[in-house]
Amino acid sequence: MSKSYNIAVLPGDGTGPEVVREGKKVLSAAATKFGFKLNFKEYDFGGDRYLKTSEVLPDSASEELRKFDSIFLGAIGHPDVKPGILEKGILLQLRFDLDQYINLRPVKLYPGVPTPLKDKGPEHIDYVVVRENTGGLYTGVGGFTMKGTSDEVAIQSMVYNRKQVERCLRYAFDYTRKRNKRNTLALSGKTNVLTYVYDLWERAFHEIGEADYPDIKREYYHVDATCMWMVKNPEWFDVIVTGNMFGDIITDLGAITQGGMGIAAGGNINPEGVSMFEPIGGSAPKYTDKNIINPLASIAAGGMMLEHLGEDQAAKAIEDAIMDVTAHKIKDMGAGRMGFSTSEVGDMVAERV
Ligand code: IPM
Ligand code: MN
Image (tube, rainbow, N blue to C red; front, side, top):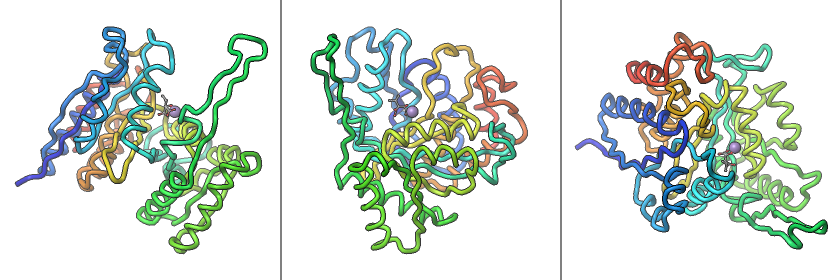
């Protein structure tokens, strides 16, 4: 009997549904080719549903999603909804509820993809950022006092406990070992100013590394310096591990060096539970329904999902197909500048798979 996987699909807002359609097209091609089954079930969480029902996410959502083998997400963010409501209410809520404590974001320049980094090519830009995904400044701990007055105080706290830090670091060490490229894990922090939180990170990093990962070389960079070296010497990096906010910021920088939001994919991973894969870019509302958005990030997210499910060959076939298309077909990753429509790009990748 062939294996079968139940996948919850959350197309979301803006161009989300268009890129998810192409992602599913390629996933289905891979399933046929490699002999497994994917059962997709769609959910309409997003801005349109919120505007109609005033409900951001039904109470039952997380419980229901927990039953799937994986979640495939498009994009969240609607121009008619105040920023923060959907992002916090859907995306962050699901990451937290499902305890997806890792945000895995490969920064890999595929052949033929233009990068803004001078004199750098695919041989220089190939590393992975492990972003902690459930703690830090994103937990919503904080508040206002005297709001609206000139004495107003706003506080937002960077909250981490040892367990959160430790499980993220262990994942990053294991990942570095499994990747087996340069066997080097870099912690990106800010120990010179954030002397509590990143002190905890740095202590745990060296303790765990020394005790259990003597084969993995440890490096430390302040986050500001990390940004500088990601531009100047990206080839120094193998795997970078960092907290939630720094990870959010440096992966946008990483994304632009690998060709931009059209191609950058990521996974929200709970190694013991259900994970969620998504393009790291937003819903790009101005391009909605024009069939010009680049679906490669969604397709690549689908590839990451298959790898996570253990379908390594199928995942590799998707990545190879993407690379063939970037090397020989699409010359520009930008929406409307690919020389092909969204669905044509999906077709080309699916055919190659
Ligand atoms: C990302 C996004 C989200 C984040 C937003 C939309 C909440 O920027 O996935 O990087 O900050 O994590
Ligand atoms: Mn971000």
